[in-house]
Image (tube, rainbow, N blue to C red; front, side):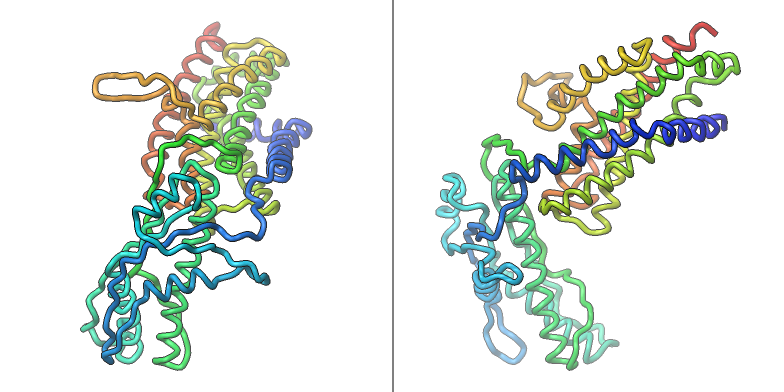
Length: 418
């Protein structure tokens, strides 16, 4: 358990280096604010988002015999909804057919299209009638069949306007369902109670192949990745400073294992990663950057951030293993983090490499690529654990490999004399 003693020691040293700690925490926030404010990323202002609606809903019949078409009422709701405390509509709605909507999307004349399926009213009726039955007869097991319906939100996921429109649209649709359920509860019971929305789901579908990488598309996830990689330089400087000051020589004489030394260093620096991510999320919200988030999203972002942070810490160990002083560590760190940030965030297409049946590009071998994709899925498109599990798993595997490499290199380079 000697790594715990190393962790405590490294934490004290991190806290003593107030200038370095301030830099690693504050500089990414300043960068995020500058980009967000001066480039205008995410500060879209009060203007309608162009939306095409394709309504296939066939309507349904209530138990009292009346006909309803919730597809029509949802469409009207989207036409009428406005920004809070404003007369500006959220959406500029065009009702059309699917082929025309796809053409408008390809031409860049709309931000997104919403496809309402044929059974949308059936699902809404099932939701309202089961809600009413659960109120009037809680012990009854005979309920209306649970018809489910999936709304499709289609657009080019490479465009920032689609990400913003999709997230707003999802929120409005959820609010519409809540409104319908609340009205049903009020009509039945005289007041409303909470009811989950298990009847209507939404699916985000990508359309188009244009790679239009804009600043607001990757600003917050990208800055998080950059701040993590800056951490690698600080870790490398901290370890080379120990070597210069003679602390490493004393640790070697004590017979410390390289695993204990490096794993002990991971723990306090991971705490710094958590603080980094939380501060960047707070700064992003403060300047009005739009992202889908709640408590569960923040926890998921922290989990993904920790994986990326450990990868960066491992990179710092590798840099420290390859350098002899602080100046070298800083210079080599810059050489490492700039191309890694570009590859992981921009993911510019390159020649595809093949190993058997596997196809990959250079950036696929970087854990930060998968961390960035996971962060983007959570923050831009509101994805949950199921949506990011594959990316997180790949990031974890690559991070473990990177840590093993760092242990091997550091052992050979720094501890081989003893």
